[in-house]
Length: 400
Image (cartoon, rainbow, N blue to C red; front, side, top):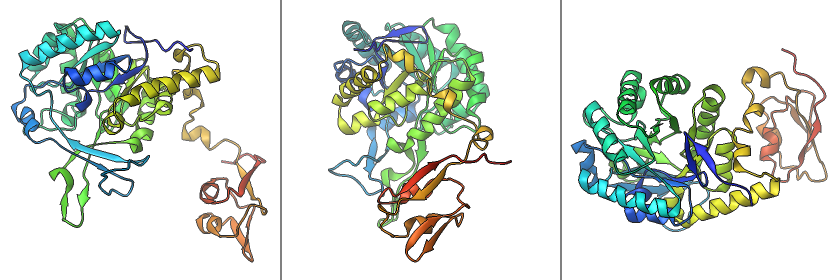
């Protein structure tokens, strides 16, 4: 059995799987369910003092859609979209702090790290909430700069993450007020992720969460109106490529610990997040859809993979894929891939010729032939229903 323990921003976790700050961590009972699956830690639902945001607890809305954006009711497909507009922690601060204290005690019993989440309305409230959450015994704090919910004054959510001056000021102030490591949860809606994270690191952030949800909108064309009455946070398996890119970019450029979030639905996804540089991986939507038992399945799958591949520790895979991820300037210098049609497998459907936008596939009668004009994009291979497009090597270098 491989060693699943990791170190993240100076804190030790028995394994890298975390329950993200969302409905699955809305109260003690919810967080307990996660810790009972033997995960490394939980990030509590964000607490805010913004009255307009706290009022959202009276009207939470969530919808689940299939790959065609049809509302789901029963069978869950592999690819789905979850859109929601929910609230922050429902309790008043003193009651929430008692819940956090109880959760911390249970976390110690389960060897699970409990992390508090903060979303203040003013600079002073960010600091005050952070200090009071630290007093409950949490080992880390996550500053929610990426929540997809906006107050009427635009003081929370995307605007905080997108406003470098405000973000830096908040990080510096909170860091001066607390002694536990501070994680910043980034919004994915940034024009320059690297520049933003660099400034947060310079301001004192100990780690970053990459990333929170995208803001999105889904319409019911029959009713001519939006689901959930408007814009909401969008998540699901489809977003994984965007998260992988964000983690890779930051891990390859900056020296800051990363916890990956947004798009992980199984053990393979968790490994992918770690292979591009995440030290821990947060789960949310998949748990909401499939239940807390998914978390133990993730741990089992990771363990089996590491054993099969001969890794002694999960730490050995952190960032392992990054050296092979090439920029465009290097990719275009690689040897060109070439393909041919395996006529024994080919059913002469013509899909490959139809899909070749370089006019490199010609039909001799009904039989497709790949000519020397082929640039090796492999799109035809993806569309062939019989896997009849096969590689034949890399005979030449691309001339620039």
